[in-house]
Length: 123
Image (cartoon, rainbow, N blue to C red; front, side, top):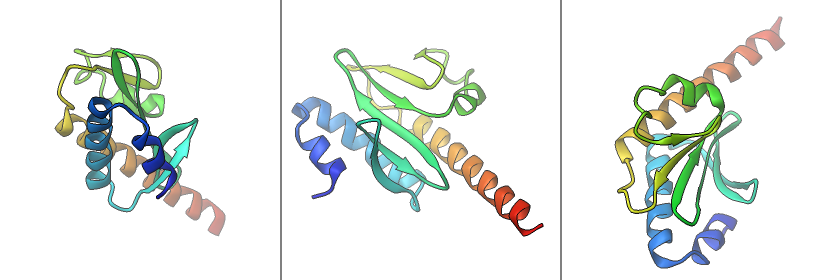
């Protein structure tokens, strides 16, 4: 059992179902990403940190770097936002399509940044 499995196992059943759905959504959107625990939350790394997710008392959140959230600000108007978090009400269904779009965008951004770093190193 890995650290993420251990984290999910101790969550209440209804919370675990939500987190598992988010986990699966991220895995499908970024199949090459590595699962890790970061900041004591489940996360994925793909050419750098990609996304974190966690559940709280009355909401669940998905965390990205601020530029990713900014790129989707119009689509995210119905949700509460912080600089790096999208907060979804606990009783709302997981917006799989929206999370998929954002994760794919973030993965592409990370990959482009990594390729730029490689080009700079070659010079």
